Image 1 (cartoon, rainbow, N blue to C red):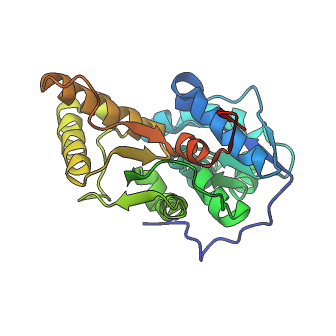
Image 2: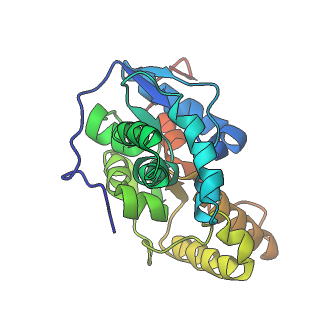
Length: 271
C-alpha cells in the first residue's frame, strides 16, 4: 500500500529553513551522503539546521516487536524540531517511520500523539522534497552513464518516493536509467530481517545483484543507505569469489550522485 503520492499530498512553497534528520546509517557509515544532502539544499538557498541530539528514528525496535523501546526512542526525536520547518530525511525507510508510524506508536498517549501528528506532516523524504518542494532542475555535468535505481520497500510502498527518485535521474541529460527485473522486490536487508534470516536474505540480495547486473547498470543509485550497503556488500563478495579485482556493481546514495553530477567546477574544483 502506497500512502503518499504526488497527487495525494499537499506540498508547501520552498522554505527558507529546514531541519535535517540524517539517520543512523548516514551518520555512522555514510556521512558524505549527509553532507551532500546539505550541499544540495544550501545551493537552493535553504538554511539547513541539524539538531545535534538526534539519534535513531526507532524503526529497528518497532519492526522487531519492541514498541515500548521504540516509543522511548521516538519520544526523544519529537522534541528536536520545535520550529515549523520541514524535516528532510535522506532515507525513505526512516521517513516512513516518522511520518506514518509515529502516530501509531503514540495512539494511546494524547500529548505525544498530538506532537507526532504535527511532526508527521512536516516529514519529507529527501528526493520527494527536491522534486515537489524545491523543483530541482540543474544541468548535468557528468559523463554519460547507465544507472539503475533501487528503492527500499518502505520508500516505495509508504512514501511513494520511487517516483521522485526516478524523476531526478530522468532530469539528468547524460544519465540513462535502466530498469531491473523485479524492481519492486526487497533487496533482503530489511533491518533485523537480514540478521534473523541470513540465508533467505542472502538469496534475496543475490537475486537483486544479478538482476541489476543483467540490466546493464554501471552503477546502482538509491536513497536508502541500508539497501545500498546490502547490495554493495553482496556484489563485492560475488566479485571476490569470481576473482574480479574491480567492482562490477558500484553503488551510490542519490545525494552523492546528484551533487557530483550537478556541481559546477571552477579550476577543476567543485563549486
